[in-house]
Image 1 (cartoon, rainbow, N blue to C red):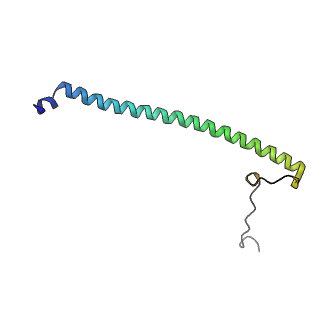
Image 2 (tube, rainbow, N blue to C red):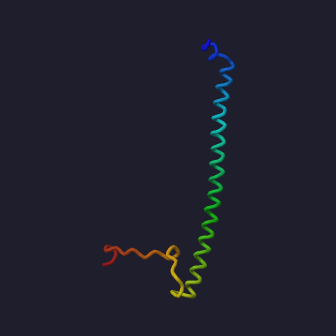
Image 3 (cartoon, rainbow, N blue to C red):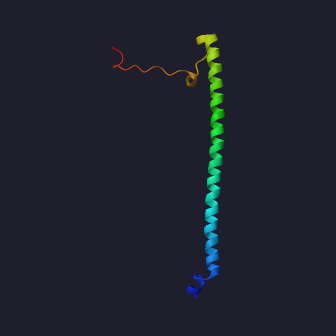
Length: 88
């Protein structure tokens, strides 16, 4: 009886429905990944634009006020690394 069921059209259709469900879920997941990737790239671009504007503003104020304003370490240039091999 089980053998007859496993080779029946009903079982084949059920198994095909399971496979189709997985295939459709995978396709949906891939579309979501592409969509989110696009959204993330746009957000990164906006963050970079905002960061550049903040740097420009800080640099302009620092050029006028000099050391009279508090340093914001994240906006400062890193200290140069001096190597014994380079300084002789």
